[in-house]
Length: 200
Image (cartoon, rainbow, N blue to C red; front, side, top):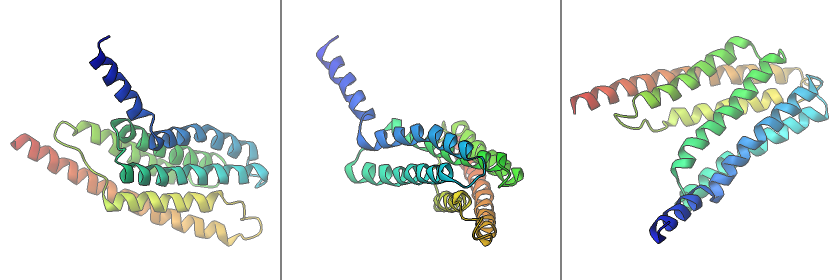
């Protein structure tokens, strides 16, 4: 291996092993622990439920933290661009599916959100030859509201405050509406991007 090749390999390695990417990897690692804690509780609203809440909260915090650090220190990498949304979808997707399995969230809500999420991800790859679809303000708002709704569902307080379940449901309905609306916006954006790319 030449010196230049060695330097390039080292550079690629350091690009991956920076703090924001390590936090993203930590979020992915936390997902199976979150799943295990929630299944271990099995709707009992006991200590394992609280453990699931903590795991989810820590994972969500790493999402904000890795983005802030990456932007502040100029550490945005190709690995991070790919791994970060995957980590988010694994966490949010597993939470929605598990809440539906436990009978706390209607399956139709989970299915609609997951179809939209993975559908838009697939659409991004389809039109990537014409350009990149950046995350919109609506997309970022969607993620925040989804996160708040899931957190409210996870909190084991419904036994002492049944109204918490109603609040969680209506926040989730708002999250669903934003999710579907931004999905339509992304489809329109993709069609415009494709048309502009073909004209060019």
